[in-house]
Amino acid sequence: MLPFFEIEYHEAKGFAILYLNRPEKRNSMNWPFWRDLPAAVGEIEKHPKIKVVLVAGRGKSFSIGLDLEEFFAQFDKILTAARGDQREELLALILQMQEGFRRIMRSNKIFIACVHKHCIGGGLDLMCACDLRLATADASVSLRETKVAIVADMGSLNRLPGIIGDGNTRLMAFTGADFSGEDCNRMGLVSKVYGTQEEMMQGAAAMAEEIASNSGIVLRGVKHNINYQMDHTVSDGMNYVATYNAAFLDTNALQEMILAFKERRRPNFD
Image (cartoon, rainbow, N blue to C red; front, side, top):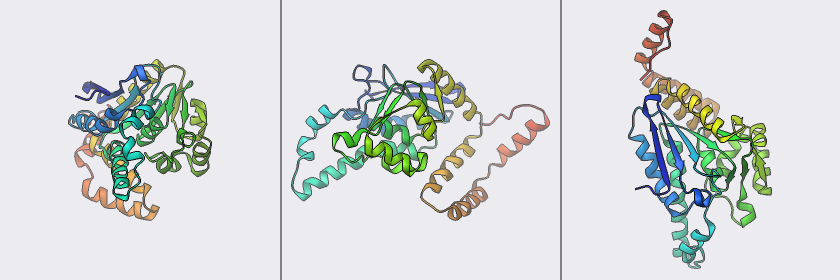
């Protein structure tokens, strides 16, 4: 049971939708979210026909982030502890909470965040962990932790510079301000902005089908190499991708592509 999540499979089209399913609380992230996100990703990874995962929110908002009231009530003793060994417990808790986002980054699936209305704090962390990001015009995205006296520790400060640059990251982090879907598009945080949530989900599904029509082993290789490049020099990355292709170049996919070209049809990749 994954009480915070709902998974909808579209295997014939090569994608699944991972819904945040706590709409009555605007998908605020209580403990079941942090505890079960790695398991939700793992469940989807059991399906080899699924190449793409859309991440969306049920209800009126994508997510308003950490459920502060519930979280502080549940972990008050750890958060306010004074002894060193007790602070180690807090460190372990933070690392455990980070694991779901790390799992998305490490996954061989392509994740697309579909953001509507509020996307605050942890919602932005989730958004940043995804490979691609889409939003509605009425989206309101905020790196809000500064306003609640927390240094953001779930990935936004670490991943945003590579997505929107150092300056824009500092602007979001220092102000804690709200940024619209169009603002996010101009900064490069999202790839496309839609008028409504329905239009966004239709566009996301079409994008997912287009991505899923490509070779699975190639998609996995592209994601793996882009992630590798994040922590290495361009020279290191060039050497690594050369070695990667020497080891994993998919001759079956290449042969299918050549045959499809000769037969004037779309290639059929598994």
